[in-house]
Length: 281
Ligand code: SAM
Image (tube, rainbow, N blue to C red; front, side, top):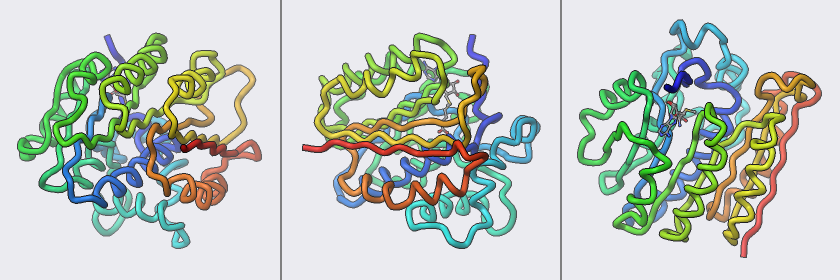
């Protein structure tokens, strides 16, 4: 039984990093006319109310999107991400936050397709209602995203973006991420795969990027953002990372230019930092 609800965390520093990258990946995919498919293996509820009881309980969005909302000096890629959040909110206050399904839907064209997986029954229902009127492009599955992914690969157009964003509520999720990416690469080596993971002291989290790197893809990018120093008791998530296989070739330069700004904008103490590594051949 899953208990994680993304509504408690929507718009936090980890969402900022993840969705900043996602918006860049979607923009890159739409540079060619040829159709593409987005597969979101862990979709969540799709969009979130920031004045809800869940969101205000921890108020995590205040340290994430909340810190960017009023800035008028956003660098271009961060501005593109914040523009998406504004598109959901309309003029005025920050009251809603787009999840990855909303961002993908908003980036899609008529010819593109979206496949969404969500296991939590409450979030699955909210997600399904959000996509009710988009049945030609989007399908919402109440299935296990890890287990279902490979059946969708390669997509009919052979252009695809896969977001793997588990809650890591279950310890085995780390191993399942690696297995899912390994199997996916066997079927669809040219796909773009974006894996989000939390920076935690537990070994499974620390080892994940290296395990993904060892899968042997020739083109990859790994970016992390920590907003504070890790607490010695290992409690809480001080940062997160995105490991991207077959990223757009421009992404490394974009992030190199903008991550210092983002680190400073979201810093909670002097331990805030980012890392960026990539390999291409
Ligand atoms: N991707 C979303 C976004 O960026 O807006 C957030 C997703 S949240 C971090 C992870 C979601 O995965 C939760 O809603 C959880 O219920 C769901 N989940 C957990 N295990 C799953 C599985 N095996 N297959 C599909 N969904 C799963």
